[in-house]
Length: 448
Image (cartoon, rainbow, N blue to C red):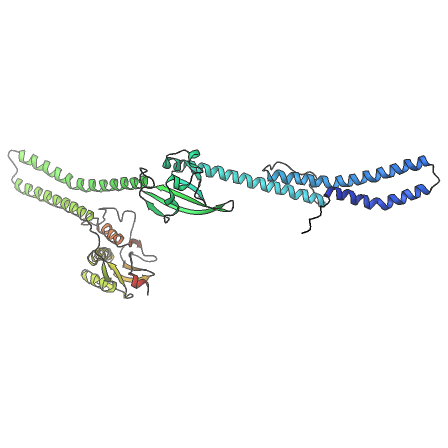
C-alpha cells in the first residue's frame, strides 16, 4: 500500500503560488535589466530590490489570505470550548470574506443563546429535582447509577458521592430495572416503608441508553385520602346524630318540665304520648342510619358467575311498578358478575331514575351497548337533572326526605368490585340525567 504523499501547508502553498504568479514579470525585468548598459553596481542593486519586492508582495498576499482564516479558526475553537464571547472582525455584507465572518458571528450568537437556554433549563431541572418529593434515579446501560436527587438519597440512606458509580445490584435495587412498570412496590428496600409507585423510562445520553427510574411514596397521599374520608364520614355522622339527638333532648326537657308542674294540665298525658312518639321516631331513624352504615361497611366480595345482560336488565326494569320503564334491546352479551349484587345495583339506579321522572312527569329508559371489551348499561330519566355532582357519592348525602344516602355509593362500590365503574351526568341537549354503568365482558365475548 502506497504511503500518502505529504501535502504542502496551506499558507506555504499561497506563498509559492504568489511567487509563481510574479515569476514571469520578475524574470523579464531582470533580463531587461542585465541587458541594459547600466553599471554592475546598479544592476545588482536593482536586482536585489526586485527580488525583495517580489518576496514581500508574496508574503503580504499570504498574510491577507491566512490571517482571516486564523481568526475564523480561533472563533470556532472558542465556540467548541464553550466561549461564546469571541467575535470576528470585518464582518460586513457585500464582501465574500465579510459574509463568512458575519455568519461566524451569527453562529456564535446562536450558540450563546442555546447555551444560556440549556444552562437555565439545567438549573431549573436541578432545582426541581432538589425540591420535588419524588425519588429519581438514572442508570446507564451497565446498571451503574449516574444521577440521584435528594429524595433518592433519603430513600437509600446514603449521600450522593457514595451512591454515584455503584451498580444497582450492590445497592439492592436491581428489581427496579426489571420489574414491570408502572407498578406498586410495597417495600422498595428493607425498612424503607411503602407502598411506592415505580415508573421507568429510557433515554439516551452520549449515544448510550440510560434508564430513568421514578419512585413515588404513596403513604402521604393515602394518609391524606384517609384523613379526608374520615373528616367527611365524621361530618356526616355528626350531622345525622345531631339531627336525631337535638329533638330528643328538646322533647325530653319539655316532658321533664311538664311532669314537674303541680297541678299538671288536663291534656298532659297526650303531650307525653306525642313526645314519646317523636322520640321513638327519631330513635328509629337513627337506628336505620347506623344499620345503613353497617351494611355499607360489610359489602361482601362478589361471587362471580355468568350474567346475561338482556335478561338481567329486563327483569330489573319489570320490578318497578310506579312507572313503566322502557327497555331498548341491545346486543346479546354475557358479563361475569354476582347476579344478586348487580340486581341491587341496577335496582338502585332505576329507582333513582323513577324518583326523578315522577317529579316532572317524564319517563325512564334503560339500554345497553357493547363497547370493545366492555358493556355499558344506560339508565336515562326525564327528571329535573343534577344541580350538582360533587356530593353524589359522599356517604349518607341525600336530597330525598326519606333517603339513606348510601344507594349511589353502594352501587359504585359494587361496580368497582366487578372491575367496572359508575358515573352520573346530565343528558346533553335535553332535561334529565343518565347513569352509565360500565362492566367488563367475559373473554369469550371479547374474542367475538
